[in-house]
Length: 387
Image (cartoon, one colour):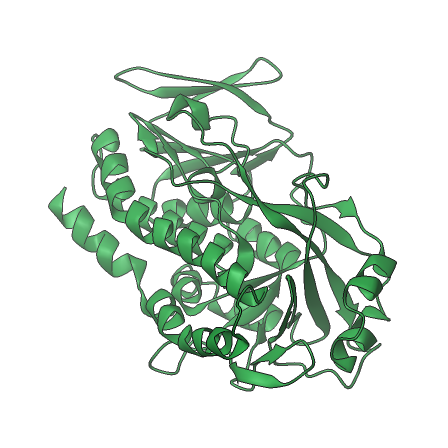
């Protein structure tokens, strides 16, 4: 079996690793000239850390990540504590880890044989027949395989070959983000997620790179003038104004900011379908979600493990395997999408009664256990056995 992955982000590279591990010939085509990520963090949660360990990347994740302790905390905007942030599954193991996105991209790419990942290859077309699927690139070349996986993000170029795309939905908020070295704020805890919530906005921090850097994200209301982007420049003065009067810790971190990036927050309604014959969608191309439960990359990695497992069990029956993958994954990812929206509204304190908000935040640990306890490989193996 041969598989083409379009998109060299976290989801696409993880899927390529899982496919390669199962002896499937895989090629990754990325439109950018180099594999890179701008400076930002990603939270790895137990449901995906298990899968990274299965790829043999457990030690690399431990070295590059920063384990978040049970001292992680939700706060009101004035610094009053609300509740602990759940950082483990219900059995108390596999803590949440902060990871620099560039570090995760690098380790996933390095774990693949040379030549698997090709950059500067922008996919512009797709076609298929009973025998194979083919993609066309902007330079006029083509590539053929048994299966094509579209892991090319919210604005997927291949999505319309599967389903009429739903319109990206703007959340009403923009997020500014960046990194601060702990050398500049040595008093900041190196192993805690901290999240402050206030009227219409919230502020999140967590460590990356073994606690040497603090990743921060500030969510504020705005009109839709800031385009969906991971690299639109921002102004630290805006953050100082937006979070004036908040907990002094927030003010002190903002005072150390130099480089600020912003992006508008979008998701989509769940798609009617993910697969069409030999083509399937993965990650944000299938189920873009708001970042408020930290599951975008983690759900993409679950997708990749599920897809590799069912495909390897059905040589010669790729369309049936892709349809089984979709049936297995759609309900779970749709629920995570829904809860991400709901959680964002709670974080932004859109309640008449803050005590009720605080109770909902404390109760969110049950949802996190549901997310973190899940082992996609177990379900995927059952689906594969039934093919």
